[in-house]
Amino acid sequence: MKRLRTAAKYLLALTLAAGLGAYLWFWALPVGINNYVNKVSIQLILDSPETMTYLGLIDNTPLDFHSDKLDSYTAESEQQALQFLREAREGLNNYGPEGLQGQELLSWKITAWFFDDLLRSAEHKYSGYSVNQISGPMVDLPQFLTDQHVVVDEKSASRYIARLQEFARVIAEVKLLVIDDRDHGVVPPDFIVEKALIGMRAFSGTDVDSNPLVSSLLSRLDEVDEISQERKDQLVTDARVIVEQQIIPGYQGMITLFEELLQQTDHHAGIWRLPDGDKIYINALQSNTTTTFSADEVHQTGLDEVARIESEMEAILVAGGFTEGSFVDRIQHLMTMPEHNFPNTDEGRRAQIDYLNEINDQLMARIGDYFITIPPQPLEILRVPEYAQDSAPGGYYMSPALDGSLPGRFYINQKKTTDNPRWTLPTLMYHEGAPGHHFQISASQLIEDVPFLRTVSPFTAYSEGWALYSERMVVSDMDIYADDPLADLGRLQAEIFRAVRLVVDTGMHAKQWSREQAISYMLEKTGMTEDEVTREIERYVVWPGQATAYKIGQLALLRLRELAETELGERFDVREFHEMILLNGAMPLEILEESVKVWIAAQE
Image 1 (cartoon, rainbow, N blue to C red):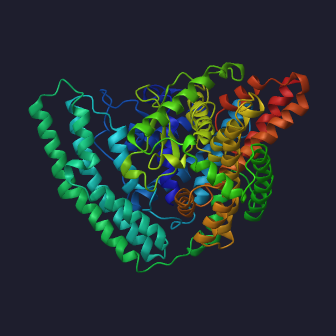
Image 2 (image 1 turned 90 degrees about the vertical axis):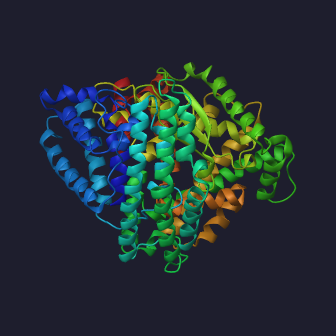
Image 3 (image 1 turned 45 degrees about the vertical axis):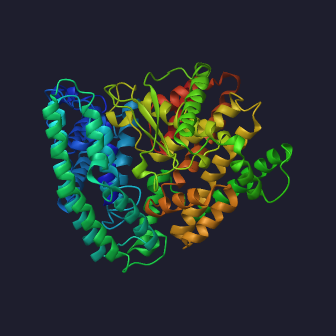
């Protein structure tokens, strides 16, 4: 059930991407598959004030009816969403697949797969943890309020204050969900409870003026000239009172509850520990890989890929004269060499981000030789907020707002700059920037004449598979590391990291590996720091199956490209291939394979 809440809010609801203006006119159009999917999408998004703001389409316009509200997090609202989705899926059968062809048939198949996946995941109401160390309202909403809610005038500032009040309400609703989870045998393992406590204590433990919900408002108000200083002072005072008297006490209540949970839980890592855990993981694998691979198949694929990549890394190390010590010792030595690292200071962090921008600029200068459509949206590279860095991953991407008000954003975790030595940064940039996430997601927003669902990326195996494909493509097509073997080593280290994920995710959730066993294996095979590995393993614990999507998606794209090259021979054009992959939008891998075969046939 928790997957339904997350997916409906952050994925399916994003299908409003073409704009709420469409809502005012297409309702009267003859109903076909496109308009039906769009109608369902808009009906979903209108129930999600947070997603409306994420899209940035009508905030602070005369159509704005939502930006003083947050979503509902009650069990009742979840059941309502589930019932709506059941009815929407049944209604889809009235529009196909019989009688459809081409893009309309593809749209029907993608939408049906997506709806079926959400409903399949919702079969298990208690399938995850409502509050954990990296996601959920206690983590996501502070950053939503500070980064996504734009303050441009007095009204938007007042609505921010209203949303602070709403946040207090959400905390109370989420606390009830946690209690309900507990009463049905769903409590996070002890190390997840401990990390969640660290995050909640860090957020609520500072003085109120230092709390980001207050301090960010103060800085944003400084940039709005039309509000009088007296009114600004009152708004900040209002925010301070709500944070101090409602939000922080709400966090403290959740902290007390989690301290109690710590006495009631165990140390097992895998989702098998929950009621119906084995079935939950089967669904999670299918949902995330968009395939029917079994846990054993995914595990073996990971072992095979780890062995291959380790051999290639060893060859680079030996050629570079790094022969002393174990494989991991040599990787860790390279990672700690001062000449390869930025200082762990504010100045060093700025220099690291400057270097990432330089990498991106250099690649973009050549990208036209490999792609037809170049997305116009800019990319901004930012530090992960300090209050979130202890449990955040090494980096992540946030999509650009569709109205152009916000660029695409790549957040890099800079708690320790030594987690990302210079020779590892190019691959990280290509994954998150061009031609990876930023390129794929931004390009997908340009797709026309399809349901809005086709313009976003609600399929992890496709989007993350593309990002990993991009890491490989800059080598196989652009030979970008020809004079920099260490950077190529960084690419392989990133690739082995994703291969290891196949092993440890299935290990914990299907083969009952412990957290420590998974950490030990990842340390042995990647050379990453223990802190970084620990963050990753604990992420996989609360997002079962998600980490397997990356490598499975990459392998699928590489296999499909090889198929196209073999079938088309000299007629194969990499620019056309990339155009077909990106400008059809995200889809399950099994449907993508069908689409590639149709495209190949059309080229002959």
